[in-house]
Figure 1 (cartoon, rainbow, N blue to C red):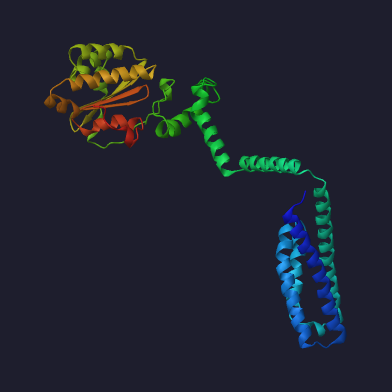
Figure 2 (figure 1 turned 45 degrees about the vertical axis):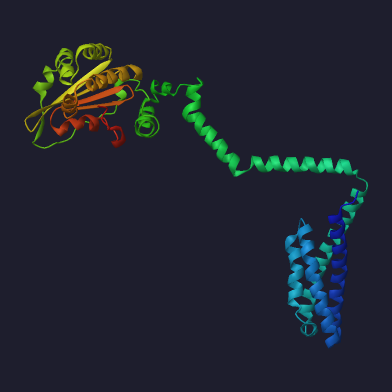
Length: 355
């Protein structure tokens, strides 16, 4: 078979090889005679122009020694006029001979390689050749795809998806296991409290009550003081008989809320005197997120069943928040009830009162 592109490249390389020899002859003639005619200068310029035209195709086909190949045009550029070459010193002549010969050897080598390729193709079946080219193209496309930025991004997103959701969702491994191991409890708690819950999934359940990150408190000034005596009076019965009704719960809503409160694992409270007003804060920890949701939804539905005036009254004194299986309640006419959210580092986006 024949390759038209190869044949053209071979013809151009042969001509360039010949023209390169002529270029040397012109320069050496000028050096030897030390005289240059206007006719010779004109022919020399035409020769250089032709070499420049052939050189572009030669470089495109050349797959090695690009620096030497580019040096052809550097030599041509140095020989601006034959008159300039006629004034070469012996050292300049030797350098010209060395550089020219280096390029000549490259041209000869490339010419031989193209001729060998032409002979090889002459014995190749056109169908076999095209099949091979299709195979090479497919291999190149696969190689480029495997190294493409798009694939890297896709793989990165898939890995991130598997790490964040896939592995636990498909039952491959439960990351909560790290929260049970002695060596990984603290790193696990730090990661889920500072990264996962605030920015990825705030409904990730707390595994234990001790995992809940709470502030140790701060100095609120003289207007707000801790009411230890008041806190001591708040028992489970007090919460069910006094606190829940104070939130506006009645009838079946009150009964259900008391039942769901009894189903919690642990709860605690704080009491404050804020400008002589009572503020109570409760936090209730459940085993499952669903149990916490049931408790919260019962309170929300119970408040919604009230008249608009009564709803406003409840909303003005009750703050109800939930994060996963933790329920936080702040009750009081003073704004200090908002400490219920600050105590457990609820973000601004989480502080939307459920009521």
